Length: 525
Image 1 (cartoon, rainbow, N blue to C red):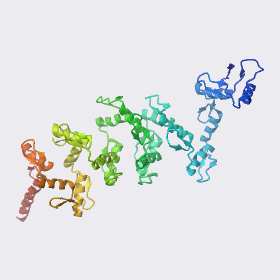
Image 2 (image 1 turned 180 degrees about the horizontal axis):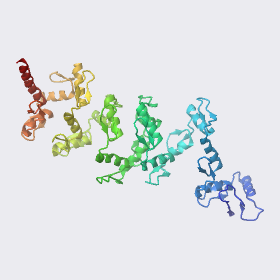
Image 3 (image 1 turned 90 degrees about the horizontal axis):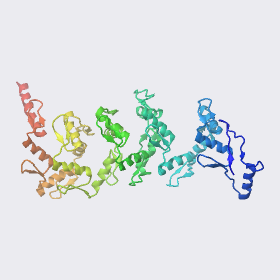
Image 4 (image 1 turned 45 degrees about the horizontal axis):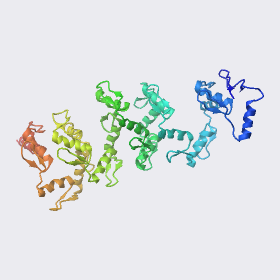
């Protein structure tokens, strides 16, 4: 049987709705008769656009507005439109400060009974909505729907500018601000501008040092509850976002999305200065600071600035001494998770990365790459103060402290500063007089395993470091470096009084005594 629907503009009433047939067969009787016969209610009203069926013509009319975009119920205060009167009535409550629905446990007020019900589940810890894909449960059906998009990959909210998809409308609205350069929300303390009020609120907590959300495991404070939840996965090991290609797990969905790009060779984000391409807009943004030399993140304890907030956070641990990543085998702490991952390999004897030139094995690809520069004599990192070049960026950074005089690692006992953390750790043992590393041949004790290793070559007569200019060999790499200055003529330690250069700092110190004696004779005269 065919039916005809006639609507009157924006009215929610349907006029002249009846089956196209004899009047003695009204729809109501047909539906009622069907209900009596089958025990179910038929859905005879079908949408011509999507095929969805409804029991009543008014339900169909409401549904049709999702296709036509018609929103006949308009808020008189803000002009927002709705497809149903009930939605408008719920919305009107947002313009009022009344919260008539009170929680009997904590006294919080809510504008709707439904909001109160959702809130009460915080006290009862009830999570009645469970995910069919995993074991996670949720307090509200809307939270469940949003979560399920993690499994289905559905991102129904698409940015009209760049095409990026989002699982929530709120995320899309926040994202749209990134396409605008406007920063309406200003910090009253430092004048920094932000694109949203949420970013401003989070930023202000840096000035007040307020961490509203505290981790119960390590005591770390966070500006947002979402950041706390993400952080807690460090302790629990939970990685709920899994790559469908390689199976790798992530603590955040954004990290998973960034990772997925690694399985593709596409690099759609181009640098206008050098033409380099990147897989994400964030990577391009960070790269462009190489050209602009912008370092917008400054340390509040010293004058150092950084290109990324993550680099600033890692650096600040130098001042706080915080090492949140701890080895479960030996208890050693690290400032970065990557440092812990690299360290864990030291507890294993596996060296899967082999050098094709000498066959030597290494525990990481990075160690192998640095080692290969011994064969190629490549030194890609050059000092901007002198002509010296280095095989690794870390060695360059350490060297530059000779020019800057920076000694960022002070001893808490005597205050002496060091350019490297390893030198500070070695120095600390001088205050304890402990020599825990014993030589099995002669019983001599040493403060570090490195010193013991060099000493044992006295017994084995091993000289693994050979000079490329002559046939001489040495027991340690530092002795080889000093010797090579004989061939190169390099004298990196100049006297500040007479300008004479020396190959070793110890020689310079001995030389300085001669100037002190000259001064003492002058005073005696």
